[in-house]
Length: 111
Image (cartoon, rainbow, N blue to C red):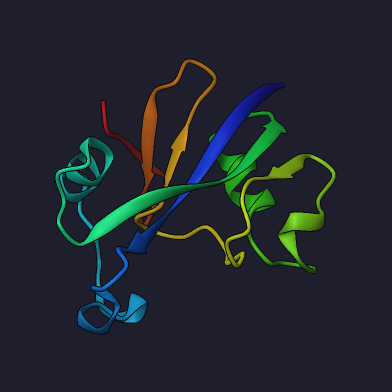
């Protein structure tokens, strides 16, 4: 078991009207800029810590599959953000602090 920290990508305050969530697809270079704080439009927000076997398990545990993922016993939510399912473009840090972006298939290292 390890602790995986989950971060969701959000459009920065004041930029929401430019980027509806359904209309953007982030690439790894976008994730690196967001992580570095240099992207003018997007930011990562820490939404959960998940005690699990790894990135795949954290992804599954932070998706609304059979109910609200925030109620999963392995998950400790962070902040008051509205909880949505983890999806492409979001980021997770593994037990060593290495950042990974959720890709359309699997994960891409942002290190």
